[in-house]
Image 1 (cartoon, rainbow, N blue to C red):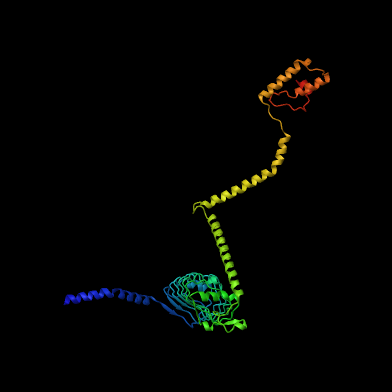
Image 2: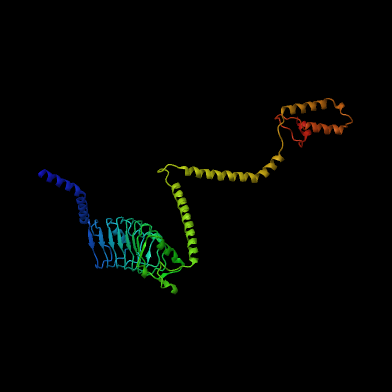
Length: 375
């Protein structure tokens, strides 16, 4: 009996061992959570003397502006999971305001005076799941602001001054809150409505998210407001324009990356095929320029060659000239009816073919009498 009981106990321990491990892990994580509450302390700066292992930090109801000093202090608290900055004096969310908070999952910045959110304000928050920007003075938002928030599930933009909002690039979003904004339900808002109706995102307080302009559409919410066929055509043209802009930006980024690779230090990276391509282009340009120059200058050179047409005689041509000259000089009687003046002319013509010591033909314009006297 005792052995049977021991076996049952061991079997029960083995069965429930995974559950006990999970419970122990949860208790350990709950113990490692470090919370700091500094609400209503009238702080103007985020305190820098907090433990670096803080995971939940509440700084609501203070006078914090989230300036560059505050941003540097926040970089020390890289283990933060939740951050509350409600009802402070924040007006601008600068680029890289939360750059080092890679573990942050919940961010509350409601009831401030935010009117500007720079493009890279949320850079580094890849694990953020909930973002609350309610009750601020936001007029418009660039959809690219939310690109770094790849895991965002909840977005609260209620009670701002937005009359237009394009579809955000948030692929895991589950819930969005947009009510209490002065929505202008013209064709510009059709893109947002189309996204809300075709995606799985839930528009919270849908019946309260009403149109403010124009007056004849005030009874509709932004998800059900009727749009004219003209808005549909504008949506198609806007989509094609967005594709063109995306293609252009892709080409520019490819070209910039090529320039960056081409201008890198060759001591760190070996030369690639890009340099061979560049050299080939330069050589092609130089050769083409040279051919164009030759084509332009060729007529001038051709005329120059025609004006200087002397050439060296071949050996058989020299022997023929010598034979002909000796035959004509030795037998003048063979030339009928030629007077003395004609004989002189013939002698000069024949003498013009005389061969000089250097093997070239003498120019016929040189005075032969002067050459004979010199000899």
